[in-house]
Image (tube, helix red, strand yellow):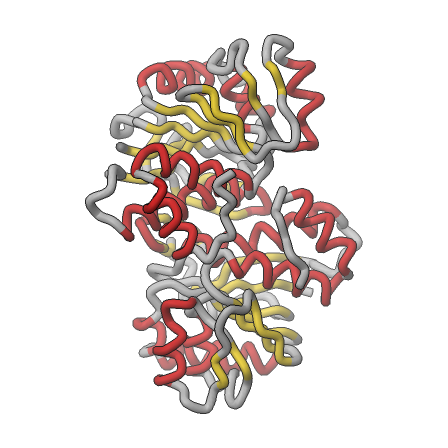
Length: 193
Length: 193
């Protein structure tokens, strides 16, 4: 299983570094686990300036990257991304070919725009619940949950909720024991809800 | 107050991105708050390959950076850093000139090596408690605490504990209301201990 995390200008730092930490730690703890690679994907391989001028170098571009089994789309200031047909098309195409699709925070808007969330129960950052409902009326937008699982599609609440959602995904991919060990290694008070 | 976070090759990703997220979010929420800049500092401004090949671009080098009021030294595979006299000297010098000094995870070894922790109660990642005791017998190494505060010096436990410690530091710098708002914005279940 390859974990691909889509990032972009003004993405929220913890939205991508939290899930990255979870899967990288899991891979380190148990090389036999079902995780091959964890990588960041962006429009190009140029440095991405995330929120507050945090500059990170994507491993791959959307033009060329290894097969993605688990696609994670992160939040932040996402409005410019919604206007990029090639990004939305890439999300749509990659989501269709992946085994699991997930969003953190306002990453749900990008999945919705790509048609991945049609008619599903979903969630996002508490501040953006009303906007998500209004923009995509065919979604059932849920509040007060760390993440919402609908088969192979999982959306999570704000920023740090991406860590909990990733630990849950890890349970699905490699078993609860590894998820518990990973949370313990990260000293993270995970509630496996 | 400028927050400077020291990073290095094989630093743990969440050790620096967690505190960065806390202070950047706090700055965004309240521009009047007592936080001017949040930045990453490394030996040079070349990309730093943190753990699991996560590549990040430091804002400044240890040779040239704005004044640091709050120095945060992160953990990871820290053993190579202990062997670098110029890094340890920089930590010693910068810590002496800063208002607060903090470590996340095994960053405590670097602060100890720089003589910043002499005779203090401190903590580190649960896996490294015994090593820290053995390497620096003049420290009082405490277990089972998210962070340990000793005047202007705060050490925190493993990886995600850096987020809790940063929220606590934020309380000291700018008041508990902003810390609570920041945790809420990050959707983080902070226990202000």
